[in-house]
Length: 281
Length: 311
Image (tube, rainbow over all chains, first blue to last red; front, side, top):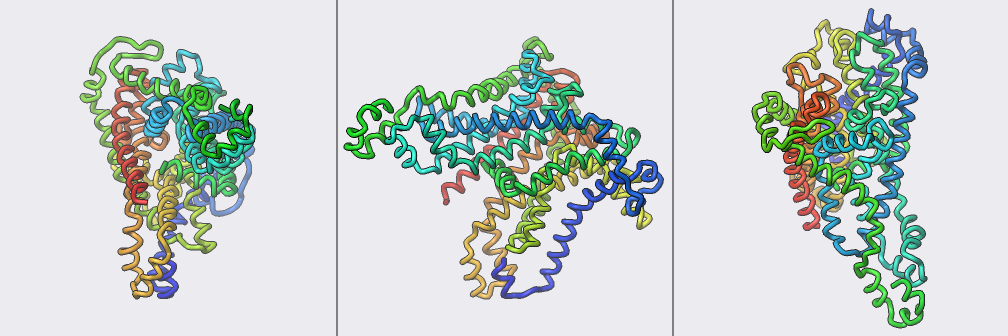
């Protein structure tokens, strides 16, 4: 594209494409600006005239209400515990298993790896009903372990780490072996530091996925004090316009969405790599 | 083996590098310890529930008991359940609305934004940013766009004295409304997949084409598009798998209504298993979904593999 573009110069077609891209970016951004605008308006004023969004007075009242009256902090805390716990667990399990599958040999290794790969094709919905019943019997619902444990069975991390360990030259382990290092020591001191980029990618991906997960927390956490942020926010949006006021709901949305967007701006590279990597596998 | 190395390091060294290599990679039971923790969770929380779910689908079960064996009874009930058949149709209709649109807009954006300029980088960030939001926030945003009176859409229509289409409540538009919100939410991934495919096309092909005085359209048709054909198929399959799992948007925007017209399979499963507590029937429905997704996943596996063979 760029080579031909420079030769032909800026044509009419260029402007047309540019206009289309600008139009699409407005579609991307306008709803968010609208939500932010509504979140800064008094509810009665909004109901009288929706166009009042475009002029003062603006107020932070909705945000004060969000922080003061809703359970949003409890949900944020739950989400941090669940996403953090799941991320930590996934990193540990995936690194160990990735090293095992990539570097070590044990009876049945290749068959096991194929079974794990098959797990990638299993959609969450195919196991939900049974998982829910098992967790009912174990009395795991409405607990943190109930929210964290299912995610630990996801094979994507193992797949990613196995690929990554395979890409590290074997000579490194062999050299360390000659230095009498134990296998655990080689894993911990020599190889693990080299996998930091993969750890970051997997960690951010897992955290984001857990943070945004909706289905499992919806069926497992049924008590209000065990809601994660996604489920909690969803629970307040029922009966939309009638109940608490649109400005308040919008303030909640901004409050919940802004941190994730800021994190995205900082870790963009890792997030994009992780999400595309998980999709293609 | 490590012990042997420890007792006679000089002897091993004398043999050379070959000898330890052969030993290190010999199968040993204790190496299993590294994969055991993951396999424990994988087996108990994925493989076992998968099989348990299949078993449940042949039973009339509730939360605490597996109930009676009913054979294919649950599947027969699904076959005669108009709501379930409607939900299969809805799922396909939703995929038809979203998948091609996502692929085409994604491709368009990738072609336009595959430049090293700052503007292009900012726009790429923008178009991917919605993907990091949760389904709750996305549906909240789009409900407020579509809502009558104070919604963004009705405000814009209001400027021109027109009435906005009722994307949530009109039976013929509700699914389209959900599809619009979904496309807005998911556009980042196809764009990024196309971008990385475009960057893998060798630059010298383009230089050669420029020397041959090929115009932009010819370059696009005979170089760019053929080079990313496989990615296009991949994007389509990935999106089919993703969009077949539609749940949150439909549940939060329309609750599956009006008249079950926006109720996808996953919402049917949720309703059956977790609101009416008919676990057997819910499990049977999820097996049907599993088969549908497995077919797409197998197709993806074949496409990815053949790309590997070619490279």
